[in-house]
Length: 100
Ligand SMILES: [Zn+2]
Ligand SMILES: [Zn+2]
Image 1 (cartoon, rainbow, N blue to C red):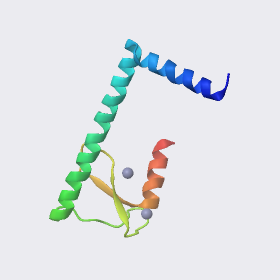
Image 2 (cartoon, rainbow, N blue to C red; image 1 turned 45 degrees about the vertical axis):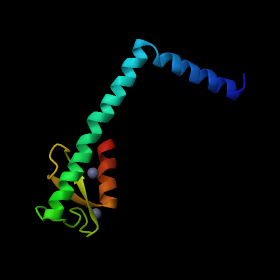
Image 3 (cartoon, rainbow, N blue to C red; image 1 turned 90 degrees about the vertical axis):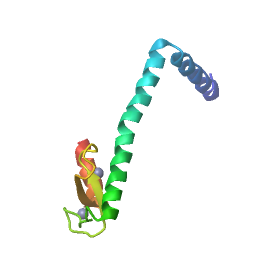
Image 4 (cartoon, rainbow, N blue to C red; image 1 turned 90 degrees about the horizontal axis):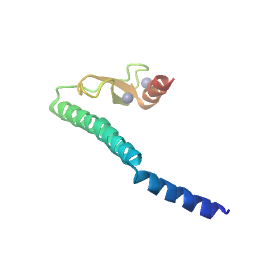
């Protein structure tokens, strides 16, 4: 069997799976997860942005290294104004630390 036909039959199997109750349930769960995760994040950013514009919240230097190019980091998107300021490097480090 060539790579091409293998890929085709894999796609066909996926398509068949999506038409089963199991597959449909999984697709539903996946889109639910996406909807549940992202609006909060987007909303948190918007609220924070508005607060920054109004001057309710002030940007601060990176709390780890003191760099003034800090980005807002949310520990919890349900608390939009509860942010930590971290530069790109410390921010990435912080998230990599989470994954460990
Ligand atoms: Zn930093
Ligand atoms: Zn973050």
